[in-house]
Image (cartoon, rainbow, N blue to C red; front, top):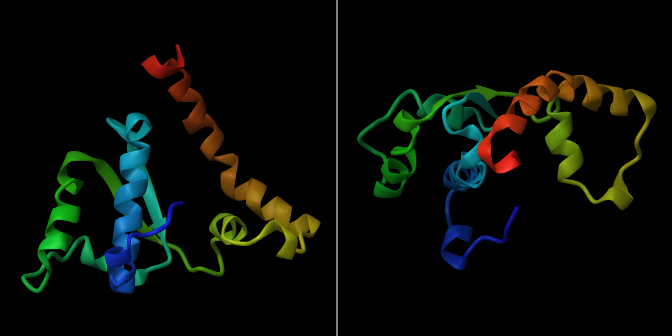
Length: 127
């Protein structure tokens, strides 16, 4: 998470979401490079636009999407209401009323990710 530059604050919602995906992948590229991974977004149009490149795109969109052929990933749509992990990360800890079922939902969401994370211990930066 970081503050957007003044010009980036003027981007459309789609462009801000696209920027966030691009910046996140760039940040974790050392882990993601050569791996198959999924990007989950609540932004339905981002999910569909990746597959439908059209001539109405701005140069910024074309440049942002330029890295896609180099990486092996899918963009999946997930409803904002069902994305518990993003929901809890986007709230102030003081404003969250956490019940046991909510915590269990988050644990279940992340349970399958642990084996994927463990395989990175053999990457050069972890040795």
